[in-house]
Length: 355
Image (cartoon, rainbow, N blue to C red; front, side, top):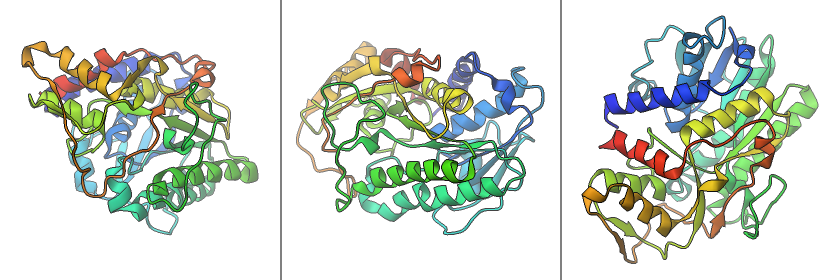
């Protein structure tokens, strides 16, 4: 991401998030832990929280604590805000079977996860543990705090498994996940993380909320992400023709980062405890081929096109066998949330930060 363009777009996105009509004041002066701060959505979460006081949304600045495995890498990813006095980076690996000392934390937003299928085959344990052991550790650390307010668990649409595609997936719709399949390391661990949150709330009466993002994109996705929406966007930014390694029929719903982040905070501030909410733009359903054609069409001056050929997936990448994964977001919309950014708008914004 080019620094100036990326920061400009992210700042515009933050203004869009903060313009949402939410009870932000509930976060005033709170100490909030955000995992995955060095990643794509984690960076948005950290920046949103730090911006609340500057935007006049809270009376007292928040304290944001970001446990990360690699502090130096996180500093580079958060270069525009790493010197903020309200941000603390701490070294912690959520693969460890131990409870971190987070002090008197009020909220935890657990976003750390290896979401790309490229990790499912190459690092299945590193995919599973943050969602299971890491979730349990964070819940216990929150419980030990002096005034715990709750934990938001960022789950995934992958938990639905192989389910009927006749209608948008509702939160109560579930299909089969083969626990003996290696790709299940992600979906099953997210399911376990959700179950931990429900059990914790039931037993300790501390709120937990679950969000299930679908295919979320925006500035901050890396060129080695491995997912098709990131790969194709980087192809266009680099003036490369898009290579289609499938028939392009798989259908997905794409959600821009600012809409997803607004959805996360809507659930944390207005949602029902121990309940899951789909976070997605159901109006943005595209087949992979339609998506590729859209990207090429956004930048006609580049004179790019889509090439079809059979190719071997990268080492460790485990392809989904589900052809259509699209949501029903009625539950989240019932809290007042709406998606605002179309795929054409969102991917143009993303690609312009990469050029």
